[in-house]
Every structure is written in structure tokens, then in C-alpha cells.
Length: 326
Image (cartoon, rainbow, N blue to C red; front, top):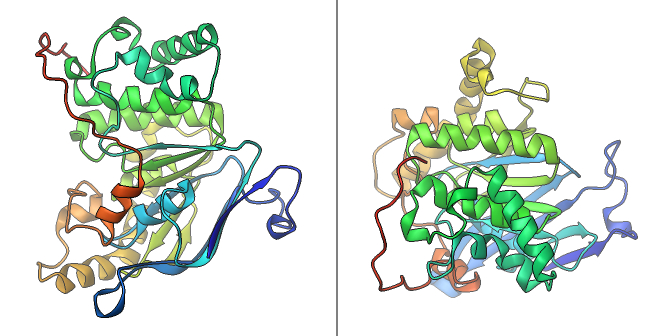
């Protein structure tokens, strides 16, 4: 019942993962139960999954199936109550996590937010500032380096969160529905930006989403989870080679693949909704554009307590009007 971080020097438990080499992440019978006795909620598993070096894996499933719980287990923010999760890492802190709620500090400037992880790791100030500014330039935020989060739009805040995660050059990038709170147009823009960055960087990414379209556009592989307790129903590989452009959304193959994923997922979504006393699956679920803020996930409060403070108290002083644009 452990989360292990193995070094690059070798761990027999992580060997022999096939032609791509040993996996970066491996879950073996991972489970998570919240509470005890009659009030216990079996949120996740048993779940078995491997994620290869440089692979972008998207996880989709009904609300409350344990997707975010699994991500937090990989991040070390929550411990499994059964099984194990192994992470092959070359550094003590190999992963960076991007949350749905941005997780940036309102009292810090944009540059200071992006530099935060580098400061924590003891990177010399000059180097940290240069790396932060390079990522701000890359994310189109250079002119807002000295602005505060309250002065930014939602899309700009999420760009700050992404820049902060990538500035520390993580071996593994964990993303928990990072675009769920954004409108459809801005979501598409940030998907395209992330696609370009990840194809250039080729980092290992584990990405949780409710959007089938998002999973198909971004992922090397799409993992479909069942209703609670979340298990893996199927894994599918999008039929689009890398480098991939956003135009794949307009193809007949894209629509067919989305239909295949929805056929796998629909029964699980309907079962989960009925279990909660709600209606059956809605049309929005097929496109993945329905709200991700459905019924609360089991253990959500426990997970939030384990995570770093991502929503500090807002700064009392009023700021200037937010700049236009995303």
C-alpha cells in the first residue's frame, strides 16, 4: 500500500515494460477508500496502469470515479489504501501538478508566481528569474510579469499556472481538468497551446478530463474509467500521428473515434447519474463540453486537505481593471 519513487539507476519492479523501456508511472492494484466501517466509500480501484516515458495519457470517466484521486496518489498528495503506485524518477521531486482552480498566489506578481517553484528548489535568483521570464514570453504573458492575478482573465491565470509548472522542468506533468472552468473558445486555444508545448517538450503527462474531444486532441492514449469505484474499462490510441495539429477535430476519423469512446463511457455516466438520483446522460457529455462540476467526488475534502494551499485568502486591496483578452 505504498507510493514509491524509484531512481533512474534501476528498479527491478519497473523493468521490462516493453520496447519503449520501463514505464515512468506504474499502478499495481491501486485502491483508495475514504472513511471506515459503514460510512466507508470505495472511491478507486483496484486499478492497473502504466505510463511510458514521454507519453501523454488522458484519463476520462464519470464524475466521482476516482480520476482526480488517482492523480493525487501519483503526486504523493494522497496515499493508496491498497496496492501500490511506482514512479520512476531521476530527482526527489519529479512531478508538477496543475489544478483546475489555477492554484496561484494572489499576493504574488505573475513573475513571482512562475518563479515560485524554482525559489523553493533553491535555484539561484538570476537563473530563476531568467527561466520564469522565458516561460512568460512563451505563454504570451511577458507584458504582465509585474501584474497580480486579480488583474488577469481566467485564461491568463491558467497560463501562469502552466508556466509555473513547466518552469521547474518536471519529469512528469500532472494535470487535473486544467481547462474545465474556461469557456469553449478559450479552452480550445489553450488546448492548442498545450499540444504545441508538449509535442516540443515530450514530457510525461497524465491528464484528467471530462472532455472526450480534449482527450483525443491531446493524448497519445485515452484511458476510459468506470463509475465508482473507478476501474479501467478500456484503453484506446487516437488514430492521429504526431506531430498532431488542431485540425484533426474537423476530420471524420475524429468524430468516429469520439463516438467509439462515448459508446464505452455512456453506460457508466448514466449509471453514476442514476445512482446519485439525477437524470440520465445528457447530450453535452458526448462532446465532453458538459460541466465537470457534477456531484462531489468521494474523498474530495480529504484530498484537498492533503494538497498544498491552492486558494489562499484574496488580497484585500482592489486592483486596476483586468486587461482585455485571454
